[in-house]
Image (cartoon, rainbow, N blue to C red; front, top):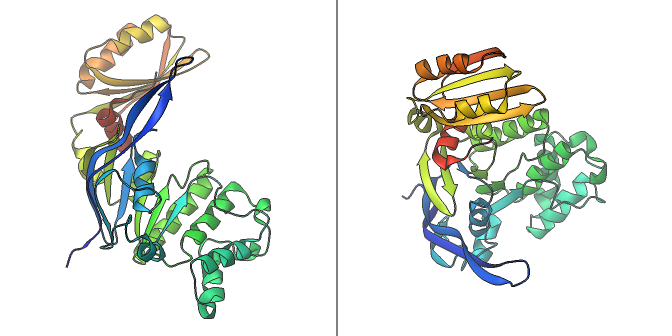
Length: 326
């Protein structure tokens, strides 16, 4: 028996855009370029990449909203392009933000409406709605209008909406975007509980700590191509030789910062600047060289909070995708 509930093989999807201010020219953009991966039953699978990498396009293909231009996709043994009528009752999706809710309806009425769309039998509809509102902690505000809800409450209601048909697979596109830390933590707890009950989850997120905490496996995607797939722990092992130096510099000049940036021993550097303070996060294979160099280069300024630590998933992402902030 095949234990993979999602199988993607050499999928492509492109679109045409116009460039130029006065003389418009059409240009083909490859949103997905030969993407292949599979997801096991009961897995939380993360798809991570920068904006425009192809994450949302992939989610839309998997959830039957887009058709790939080439390649093969199988969800629960069904083709989402040809078998969407059979597949849709078995899956659901949740988008980040506050879309896909009717604000002038109550939380209960929203779920009742979507239950009818998914043809949930009347004999179980009321109990399922109450159970879902309890699951996401909204049972006490079940009959309040959604327009009175906070962003976190709306997003928890989105989770309930995505579960109204008791899906085998749940697709989430940046579900915690814009949430405060408490709401985001509550959302992660709900997702963990759902997964323990057997729901397979595929999510995209820009929050590396969230992916590290939730996902069994992670795929990095950039410019429409899949770069790496592995468990979070194995991905971090691939940069075991890296050290992370973090420090705060008071009164440093831009030329001093540029001197550090140009050091060959540094693989990547992130610099945040506010008033007279610079905060550096440096990836290096040679901390024994970089730390003394920072001290020697920062004459006439104050260095505080210098620490050396092991790389996080964010550091793996930066090294793999090759982006940095300066």
